[in-house]
Amino acid sequence: MILALPKWVGGDLSPYQITLLRYLSGFAIIAPFFVYSGVVGVAGDAAPASRRTFVLHGVRALLAVTRISCFFYAVTHMPFANAQAIILTNGVFMIVFAALLLRESVRPMTLVAAGFCFVGAIVAAEPDWQSGGFLSYGAGAALAGAALWGIEAVIIRYTAVRDSAVRIVFAVNLIALLLVLVPGMLVWTPLTAAQWLPLLLIGPLAIMTQMSNVMAFRVANAHLLAPFRYASVVFALVIGWFVFGEWPTVWGLVGISIIIVSGIILTVNVGNAPRRLA
Image (cartoon, rainbow, N blue to C red):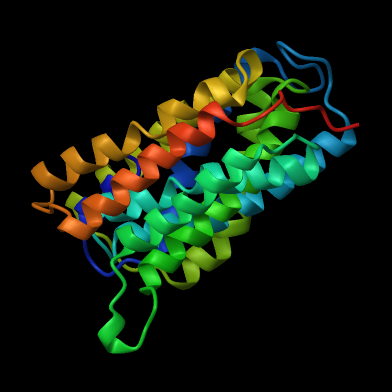
């Protein structure tokens, strides 16, 4: 739904403007909860965060702003379900970065599944070979956003057990809002009354997603949560069909199917539980 709203609004809006509205409304939602929970100085459900944790919140905010802008660009420049399928390769990147940064073991079958997942992404992108280009800008943006999410997921794993969920979401949204404020204003395009409400709804939905992610990573291993990510492509197919009148081509469906099957194999073969960073 978060990615469907800017596509539904339509128009030639910059991804930075959409991202600015997302973090503006998101910050307005989380700020009262932050103040109410009394997490200034002492977190409600965690000890005071370390300086390293706050730095990681800032890094994550920068990654999130770039990633979300890439996703918004992708869904507004290619079929919705195809973009969602490419975005699902974030599981591959998450495994790669978890192995590099968290020293998780990687099984051979995991590497094979990761390779097939990339193949599925290329097929789902439906590259226009005749034009001389390999991937469209929309497909490239979706793939870049998926890679950034892989790094961001590692940061979420680290911070979820070291800080309050409310403080994490508040800090990330505040920093991200400050980062995207100037770029968003520079490309600002006047909005109609019909465009304001859907774009402002992105923030509250994103806050719910962020809180859910933090709490999920806190109580469950990543390999138990991974299967639920692939359910999103089913919702994307339904939304694309009923809302936008889009239905993937045969090659698009083949690519989506490869990604889903590869994602399930990745889930089963993630290896050992992640180790915490020192």
